[in-house]
Amino acid sequence: MKKKDIPQDHSALVNYIRELCYAVGEDGNYETANSTGWEVKTTALDVAWKDIETRILDAKDKVLRGEVSPVLFYMELRLMDIKILSAYTGFWQWTIKRHFKPSVFNKLSEAKLKKYAEVFDISLKELKMEHFNADKL
Amino acid sequence: MQINFEHRQAAHCENGVTTNLLRFSGIEITEPLAFGIGSGLFFIYIPFLMVNNAPAFSYRTMPGLIFKRTCKRLGIDVTRKKFSSPDSARKVLDECLLNNQPVGCQVGVYYLTYFPKEYRFHFNAHNIVVYGKEDDCYLISDPVMEGTTSLSDYELSRVRFAKGPLAPRGQIYFPHLNEKVTKEKFVKAIRKGIKQNVRDMLYIPGPVAGVSGIKFVARKILKWHDKLGNHKTGLYLAQLVRMQEEIGTGGGGFRYIYAAFLQQAHDFIADDRLLAISEKFTTAGDLWRDAAVQAAGIFKGRLTQRADFVNMHDRMYQVADVEKEAFTQLSKLKF
Image (cartoon, helix red, strand yellow):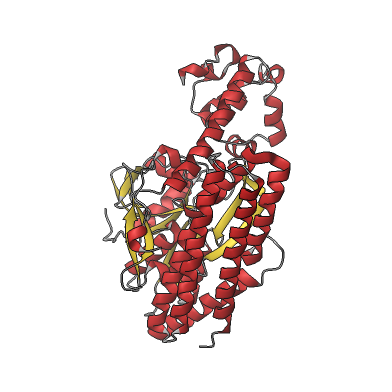
């Protein structure tokens, strides 16, 4: 890539960082220059976020239909998967999968719910099934 | 308390931390040199490690290795510590700062407050330098940022103890300089770096790593298309592109850094073939970017035909061939 060809497209970085790129200068030697972003990367990031949004909405519908507990919704909202959630809460992965079931979730002890609320950065009340209100977020 | 530490922006976080820490110790080193001596260039596909619901790809070596190898090859001792509790981690960090020693930290990106929200995923192999403390705030030099920033005690502790794959566990590291690094040492280190990189890219057994890994993924794309359909394959390709050039992950950018490394190596080892091979890596980097444009067409939903996926496959084969040729030529250099 020639230095003059470094893309300067709009990206989410615009107000934060201009990233550093290595490119070939006029004399054939490598130089560095800043870039505001590259459209191809921006779309790749958009695609990833769109996928996340679908997953969150999906989880929301399922919670509203009473098929799963809010744990799944908040897990998706915080971009986690079961592995990461397991690492943060200290619960085993199969335990978390069980907690996805509303029947199991509704009987969870205060201490366990507190753990989830802490990891998800929400209040205990928001986590409870009967107070579930995803539109607020 | 603030250490007189020079912040220099870098294209990649670990290169940047390595370069900045070594420069603080008085070693004249640049980002490409650190990257090349640490044998940073790589390609690996890790099917069982799912990141954001797509398989993981990496265009560089394991996190931590660039710093480790670069220091080792220059004959510099390294301190590296992991912690089980945030309190002991904080204590050791404060002691280092009191001793006027800036410290490299491995951190998770998700809770990194100064990062744009769009970039904050659960990715745990980001690297920063802590170079001072003022009141409750730690002074941070993040190599991908243009300037320095700061994090509160709580924020720093949180990112140092991020959980999940590659959890940093409060890891800190810094070099100890015992003797001056001579030019001869650099020459030796550069040779060693090139040699290992040749080995990594050409001779690692198994299909997923090195040049053969690129071809493996190329074939996989066609299989994904058969089995998972357009949308899912598009998602995987988006992941491939993001790992290639995104902040803190690198990629096609890495090919350019390696080309820059070979140019700078020429200042130490006067062998003109290095310059010719450097151009090959520039070509490889360009081809990676072209492939990324093709991939973008697919994940945007503009390209949907089977032929478009075959095209992507062919492009990756082409990149693999260029890189293979370049590394084979490097392996034949006898300096």
